[in-house]
Length: 215
Ligand code: GRF
Image (cartoon, rainbow, N blue to C red; front, side, top):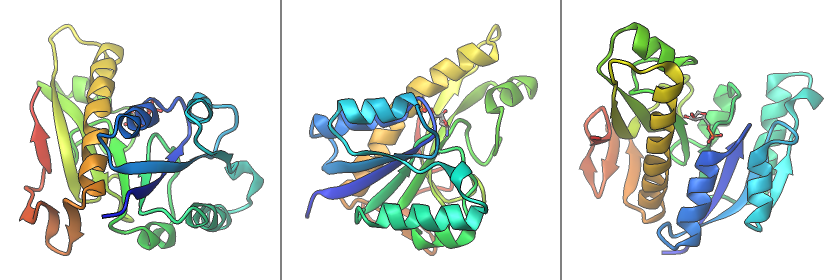
């Protein structure tokens, strides 16, 4: 089994990227991050990549006049690195169906909620307003439906009665840094597959919630 080539896409601070850098550096993930690509200039995630000796590239979406044009340039850039896995780590772009289909079964996203609840933005505030006692985060395969692809792993975060959105966000973020390396570790060890009937881990079909880590 050859060491997997990973490309990470970011738009911001890249704390999930950092968790992946650390897990590849320690040897826990049998993979190498061959490039980090940001659609925004000057973000901390690009610095994190450079510091780790990883190729850091900027592809500014503002330089393109359509979503299709940007996505096709992005696809060409990603493919020039010949990745086995593409990891969206806080990449704040809606992607075209064509782009997503090209990476089907080999592209992950992380989302700060227990999907299918709270797709989209402001997930922490929405969980609080709904009076949820449990919140969390999810790693999923990316399909054309926004935040809608088959789930790989979820971490559950209990909601405290005196929580506010920022405290809750902080605890969810810490869990993201646990489950993203785990999902990437499984993928790189050839333990995870996206099939027609769902996601399998070691050949066994996962439940629709994915593998669930309780707090
Ligand atoms: C995370 O909350 C992730 O769930 C969401 O974007 C945020 C990225 O954070 N998709 P970071 O840049 O990894 O710190």
